[in-house]
Image (cartoon, rainbow, N blue to C red):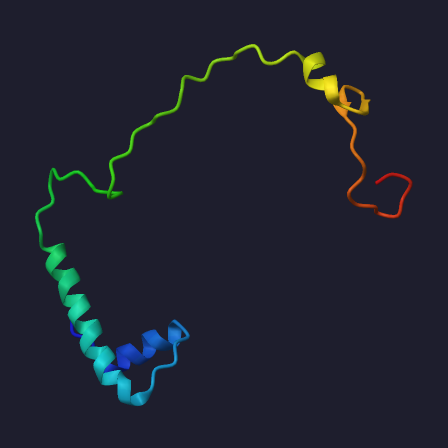
Length: 101
């Protein structure tokens, strides 16, 4: 697929890029060479080749998800100054002007 200067101008317009008129020829040559490289890659036989999605191999290192007994609630609340309905009560950070924050 040969790229011409009109195609480069149209792509630049769609991408909202401003390219100076004197640079159009250089961009046309560069875009044409990129398209040629992609076309060469399309011609390769990749049957049976596993895809490379990341440069480093990765594997799951998470632990098994199983429930464990947590810290006793009363021990957690030992240093809490105020609590309300089983939760830690803290000062309001935002005041919406109503009776409650």
